[in-house]
Image (tube, rainbow, N blue to C red):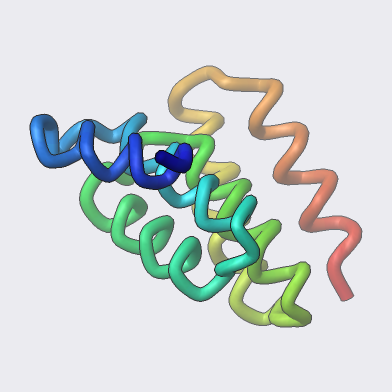
Length: 102
């Protein structure tokens, strides 16, 4: 059973678990399925906008696919959410990525 399959099985028991949903999206990235990962990260931003790590991962994925136009507003929102949460590390990471985008 793959990591993704294990996470999917756990989500059957806890379908609203933010961390499991986030981990599943990252498993899709690891498997080379960026579209499935992006879909899940976007859904997570919608359902739990205060889960700060999602913004960085989503923007990083979009930037890697050459879609800086989509990554920039994600980062802007993520920076604000990180600031509100007092997560200076995540805020700094997202600011750094935003500055690197064309």
